[in-house]
Image (tube, rainbow, N blue to C red):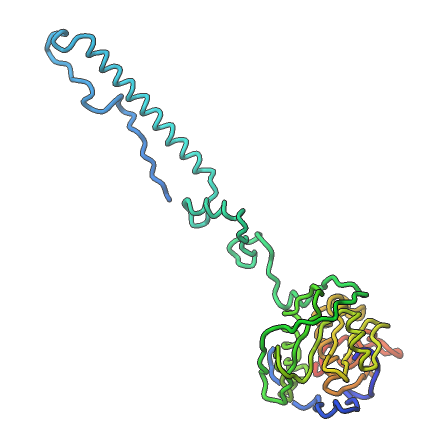
Length: 337
């Protein structure tokens, strides 16, 4: 808990009834971590073959005279006009096809699909690779964990919570702890991301699941060992005060030990701290590990060697350096070498 400094020594257990649930942090958890063919009218003659009789040796009157000649000429003229009109229509059709939008699969289907995108259909995400550069990019878990999100430092929310639905089975074989994730309504933060972060962080071998000693399982209903709660600063302060803790001075988080709730201050989750700067991924891991460490019974402790990693139970949101000793940020209970 970032509110009060408790205990001395590396991961010193806290006193009180909650200690019955506590286990040795150095005990042993699971390692996760168309083509279209156009018919062109014939243009090599002025009418169908046989439209005109071949000349013969009969006298002009025997061949029908001027009336018949005029009839032949008129028929030929009509045929020619028709041929020109048809050819013009075919040419016009080609020009339309040349500017019509086409999909990668070609044909009229592409034109229809292109038009239908204005009817509310989503444009494929750039992450699909098929239409790179279009639509919103889907961020990976790591990218989301590295981002800061807008949230006011003085926000006081509704005080009402929603449990994040779903179930994440404990991956290890050690002492099992069950927990629920609650998110205060109206925060505008991704509760699913928060729940994923809790499960992945706690079951990392560098965390309290180290060396198989503990394992953590997320439920969304029924009884659980604790409820890790993402809440506005105002609501965090309200719940922490139930356990005699004041989180308002530095806008921090706490383990409200007299209740079922481990409170994660949404302002810190969204914006981080000066001590970690832009290292939001690591800072969020530290927040989870620090407050759950309290729930497991461990008190505050600070680094004692200049240049050393700060213990996860150091109040790293507040400070890294103290008494002339400069500590390095560290999110893990068992960071290794």
